[in-house]
Image 1 (spheres, rainbow, N blue to C red):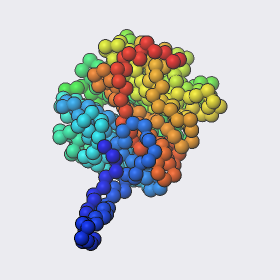
Image 2 (image 1 turned 30 degrees about the vertical axis):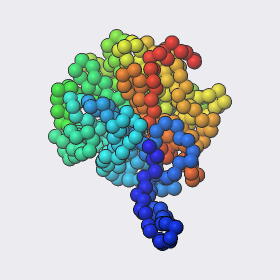
Image 3 (image 1 turned 180 degrees about the vertical axis):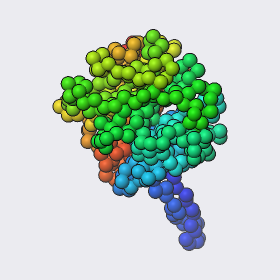
Image 4 (image 1 turned 180 degrees about the horizontal axis):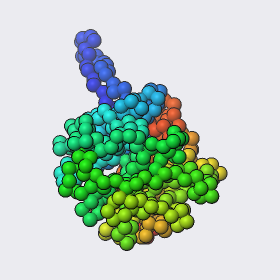
Length: 406
């Protein structure tokens, strides 16, 4: 479907003996969508005009029990309300991602993931940039949502928190979710984030703050990585091959071209987080940008979609290179193979495929991307400040496990 949403009216201007002269006049045009002569990768779910200084952030996706998809993204940038009361838009597809329509907007939701549990849809994140930790519930497929007004209705913790559309893990009838506590003596990005994990019984009331246990928060330590550590964030709750819960985090470092991930160990009762800097860091392509990890029981492999630096860009900070997106797999969370290059553009300044959220869907993987790309105006403001949310599908992904690019 053409993403341009126009309402057209036929105006009869004149009658002549030869017939009718009809002119099509545009009554209204959705100001968030413009004509696309440029081929944008994937299916466009939403577009925001860069000139308005509001950008697409935090793409999330969920498969409903009836097989339809819902997706969400928040709004960030100087033209947004991210620092007061953030806005998240929710979309639905009933044809496996071929077309999308907006079904709701949520005021007071930011950096959030979607997930389905026991027939209901949840969205979990903060209510603004570094705000309270909140969760909402929808019982009508994302059209309406509960309001987190107190500890009984989804206000999980008051304070300053950071996260992204990170996966929830269901393991041993417990739901696990990694976040970062952002309250610190410093306001500096990265250094203010402390790694932690929340958990609750899958049979509990997830809107009740008392249902959720939390670990201690592990703060920034400037001694890690011989002083090159700049912070960890956007953690994944994952069960390792031995069945232990770990928080696998994105790592920021001052070393150009270096991609790392960190593993924080989580106790069985969900109350203690611990980290060994001697063994807790691994080289991980894409580790300097947000990535999500999930385990596939059929292939017996962990999978992720992450960014990868091309050889020509290893002399700059890895977190600033988001123009190549790859599919990766691992049997042990430590050793990873790059199986496929999914998206690529040679320019790194104004093009990016980033903050991907994805799910297994039968034989396929479906994913949504915060995409910075060309439009009919001046294109994205930069690689980071994306103008699109796009939908993509990897068909028969398990067949790619035997294909190793690197």
